Image (cartoon, rainbow, N blue to C red; front, side, top):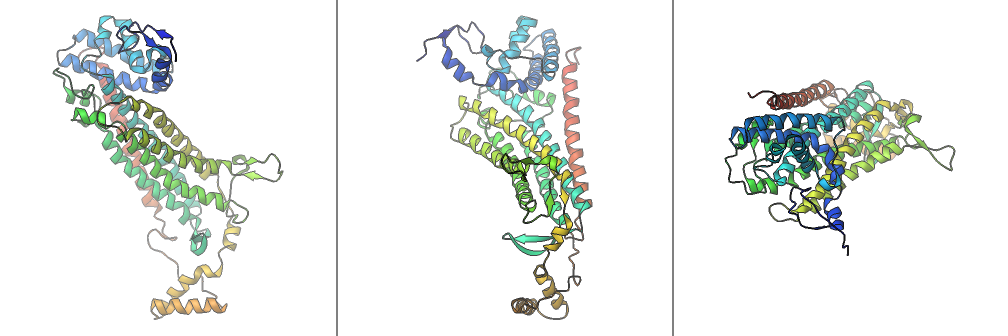
Length: 462
C-alpha cells in the first residue's frame, strides 16, 4: 500500500486541500492528460458559449465574458497548433483551460465554471468532437466509395466468376463486384445522417445531472454552438454517456461489415490459385525465409482492423452498459477506445482507398475461370424464352450437365436490368456520393460560421 501523498493546493477542480495518495491519484487520472489534448479545441468552444450564456443571463459581467471568450479563442488556436499542454497534476483539459484562464484573467477565470460541472463540460466537449470526427470518418468512407466506383467503371465488362458457398455459381464482372462495395458504403454514409441527428443536441446546463438553481439559458447555448436542440432531461444527459459512443462504434462496425467482405475477396482473388487480381509489389511484404514470397499483409491487417473496430464497440459496451443512472467514473475509460477506433477507422479508409486504386486486374486468369457450368442458369432462361416453364428448363439443363454434354450459348442472354452487369448504376452511385459530400461540406460550413460568430463576441458585444 502506498503511503506517499500529495497536497493538491487547488490544482484539481475538485480539490479541498486534503492529502491525496499519489498512487491512487495516478490511477484515477490515467491517460487523461495526454488523451484530452484532442478535446482542448472543443472544450474551448464549449466554454466560450457558456461564458456568453452566463453574460446573457446576468450571471457574469459583460467585460469578463468578452475577455474569457477572447482568451478561449487564443487557447483554441494554440491547441490546434499543438502548442497547448496539460500538466499531470491538472488531470484533464478542463482543469488546464481553467488554470490558463485564471492565470491570464484572474477572478474572471474562476467564474467560468459557474453553472456547470465537469460532467456536462466533458460531455459537451465530446459531443462537439464526435460530431466533427464522424464527418471525418464520413469523408474517408466517401473517398473509398468513389475509388470502388472508378474501379467498377474501368473494369465494368471484364468477366470473372461469381461465387456462392465459395463455389463457382454464375457469370459476374469486376465491375459488378466493385460496385457492390460502393453501394454498401453509400448506405453507410446515409446512415451517418441519423448518427449526426443523435449528436445534434446540446447537453450543457445539465451540470452533474440534476440541473442548477440558476436562470441558465440552455437554448441560447445550443444556438451558439450550432445544435438544433437542447438535450432536455438533465438526467438523460448523463445516462447518454456511452450510448452515443456505442452508436458511433456500431456505425463504424457496420462500415467494417461492408469492407471486410471486400478484404476477404482480395485475400482470395490475389492468391496463385485464383489469380484474378494482383497487388503492386510496393504494397506487399516478403518472407524472412522464402525468397519467392510476396505477402498481402496490408489486406490482412486491414481485415484484422475491421474486427478490431467491432472489438472496441464490445469494450465500450462492457464498460458502459452495466451502470446505474447518472455519472460514474467508469465512463472515463470510454475515451481511449473511442479515440483509437476513430483514428484506426480513418487510417484504414485511407489505406484501403490506396489499395483499390492500385489493384491490377488479371483478365485472362479470370476469364479462364469462367467455365461453361457458370452459364447453366442463363441456359435455362434461354429455354424459358423458347416456351418451357422454368422448372422444365431447369431439369433439362441439369440432365445435360449430368450427362457431360452441356455446352451453353454464352451470348444468348445477358442481364441488363438496373444493378446488373450491363447497368451497374454508376451514375446513380456518383450522384448519391456527391450529395453526401455536399451534405458533409454544408455541415462543416454551418459549424464554422457558428464558431466564427461565437468568438467574434470577444472583440465587441453583439
